Image (cartoon, rainbow, N blue to C red; front, side, top):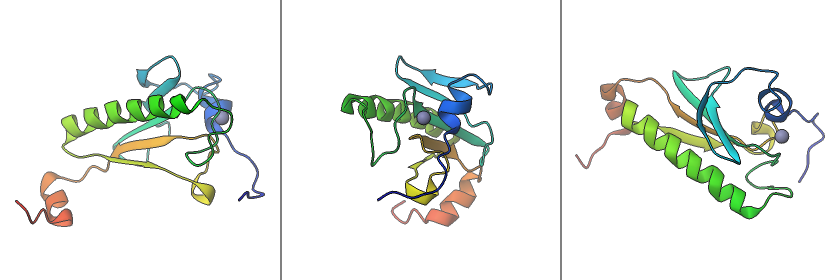
Length: 126
Ligand SMILES: [Zn+2]
């Protein structure tokens, strides 16, 4: 399925081109993780492949091993956020949820206190 919305690609056009300054968190030969330039959360890292990949569902011409490398960096960053802040969420968006048509993964902590999180999620097995 395709949509006719104008193609927007912040990552190729702004971040990877150097037009916008970014603060890297983890970088490999093919993958870059950096602090979100317009964060929605107190801790908000974005993980992207350095080459253009449309989305999780559409890897375009990318070598499938690239997805594994991206997910390995997502895993590394998520573990760092969990260790430092006690909890972490990970997501990637598709279709109309995806504002920038370059696969990117959000790794974030929403900033609630531990007691707020425990109230929210129950943790009934404690
Ligand atoms: Zn791109």
